[in-house]
Length: 453
Image (cartoon, rainbow, N blue to C red; front, side, top):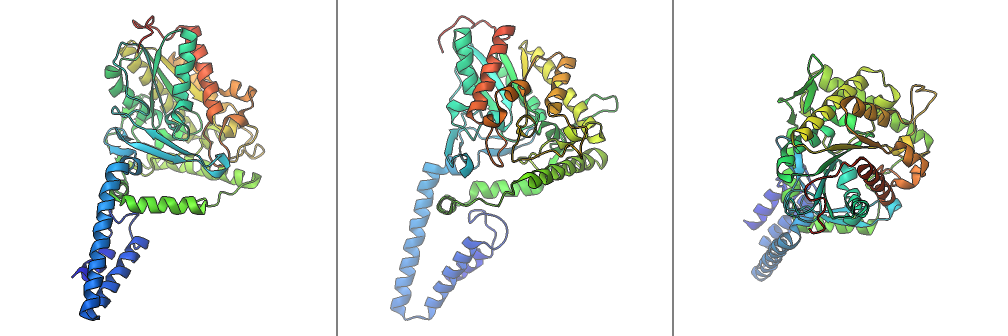
């Protein structure tokens, strides 16, 4: 019976066994053990008894080890995100994340925690004890690639405290993969309870325009206004993948992690060189146009991608195209709604405009524009577009393009296929933002003279 049960389980896509649909190595191992157990049925009774005792002892040991590891390390090896009806997904309160940098960026393992409110970092202090700033953004703010003390939010806290001479709590509300549409929805839910003295929203010009179309949460009305899209729905495969990731054996995850570290091999080869960079750019341009057609022209409301965000190639290479114009108009409506949301709580709003290394650095491996093929391209186009939107919507903004370019942008970003800013980039951005906040007097409130947490 045990042998038959193991053989049957090997052919069943059970999420605890893990990994994905189909026949994998864990299923193969179960099948082998089941066949071996079946073979012992034909062995002498003594051999049969010893094999059964060994099988049961190993099985019970593995079950006990799994229970202990799941209790001790479950938060570290389980996913840090869960699906959400309004936001598509969100960080799981109390989860722990682990991110391993690529070899070219040092291969360092970054461990970080999500607090009980769903923000990266320590638990929040009681409201009113000190000035509070909440920072929204995508992976640039989430900062899973940096130690907590090196993230933009923590560096902003340090620089603001130095300039203002008082304690400042900075809430890291960044979530990897988020677009401005998700950040708007989170603002609407967060601000009443957070009661911040300043809201900062980081717009990554490199991919945030495309997020608005991929996420399918909003669309433009006939008069150009903003409409929520109640028909947006995640592809069913996401729920299945999330369940597998959450239920898969911790032992299997640890073994897979150990094998990767021993092999020290990338999951796939990343082509380098000018031709590869230009090919990537053309592929991203085609993808941006295809995503626009899928959602806006064809009316497809199924969300198929949450975390992979390509460069906004249509906005920079073909700024007069239908897809670029639609995304720009949608971005303006989102930012205008952000301003109204902050104004309703009587809290200042500040946008931070982060350029892509493709644009601001002299060279970055993630992509390169063929200026002969795309004569309309301007390096500062994407951040300029957002800055112009901010002027029209009367939202103050810090555009990082010029200062990053002046400081040698190539040294402010990760290397290879990672387009995120590094610790130097985050610190410089935080310093510039704190300078702007102090000069404009944006951070004020009843706790402005407090020095206690």
